[in-house]
Image 1 (cartoon, rainbow, N blue to C red):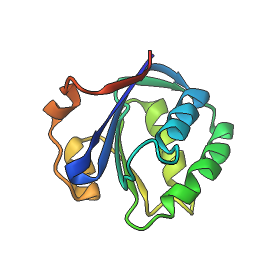
Image 2: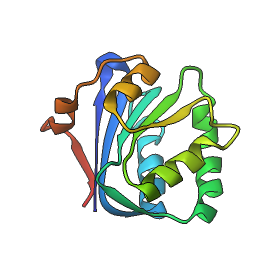
Image 3: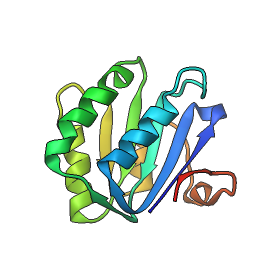
Length: 138
């Protein structure tokens, strides 16, 4: 399992890459880390690449995660685009998207182009290979 992230300050964008088998607690820990007051700059746009992940998350765990992120999603301009492939990752991502309080703020796509259009900022696939991504957990 690997979780990495990088801030693109010029675009107000946080990009993260999740690979391997990931549990709900891993995603929760990352969210709490990235939203620690004063630790990181405010960001309003999030791009998550979960194409190479196996999310070991039960649908019953989604409501607790939604409660955790709802206040952050209420910030004006907040949007979260998720690039997904594979049935389970897509189903879990869609479950997040379908929660009423989040459905205008979270969208799931199979392409980077869909994500960038939703977020309204440019991002190229090669940027996921930038060497200065911070490793959160391996």
